[in-house]
Amino acid sequence: AYTDFIAPRFAVATILAALDHRRRTGEGQHIDMSQMETALQFIAPLVLDRANNGREPGRTGNRHDAAAPHGAFPCRGDDRWVTITCLNDAQWLALRRVLGDPAWMREQRFATLLGRKRHEDELEARLAEITRSWERDDLARALQEAGVPAGPVHANKDMFEDPQLVHRGHFVFYEKPKLGRHPVQRSEFRLSDAEAARNWPTPLVGEHTREVCSRMLGMRDDEIDALVAEGVLEVAEPVEAE
Image 1 (cartoon, rainbow, N blue to C red):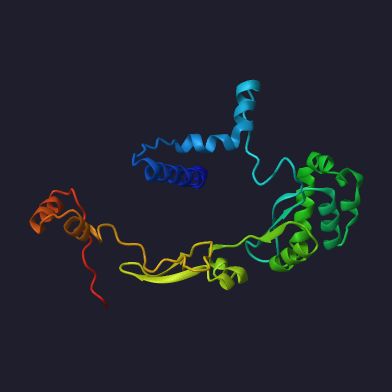
Image 2 (image 1 turned 180 degrees about the vertical axis):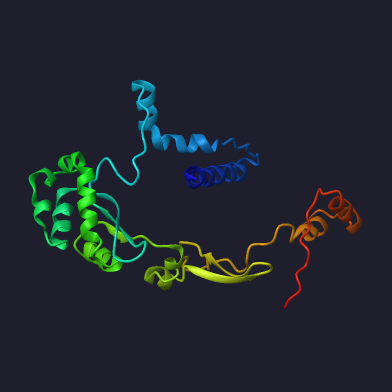
């Protein structure tokens, strides 16, 4: 799904450029965009490493070449986790202070990023032993206040109770035929003079088929019925209100 989030960024700029060209010249544009190619440049180092050195990268899980620790660690309770990242030695020192600076964390082999990367398996195992005694949100808050990048791992149900998302009014609820009341995410941005929000739920498949065919395409009812009967068009059956 990674490319699904990259391609639209290129598509928006490309469409705007084509619209600007049409505005200035009256001519349209044919846009040829490969979703794979738009995303490929973001893994250029891996592609070059394979092409020039013949190396195939393996799975790294939650780890990162430039950080240690870098992962999700268990907390008190059932399936409760917190993410912790130390990108430099200052963050590592802050992590030590929050966790009570146990003797093993003061060992020289963990003092530098390179040392922590060399002993990452042991580092993660020992760190997990400590985090298990913490409440997830308490640990995340303590680390953030100390300057350590950290955050709680939310289950889906937790997202609706997240203080920041609640404050932003991020979720709105709609009533939809056949589905009932369901949440929808609002736009992540807010406009000062316009409301960036949906005003209705997503339509059912075929909900507006007749409206589009008749009002926009000028088709007669019998023409629409014939195409529906042949399976060319799909029309959503009306749902009676309960």
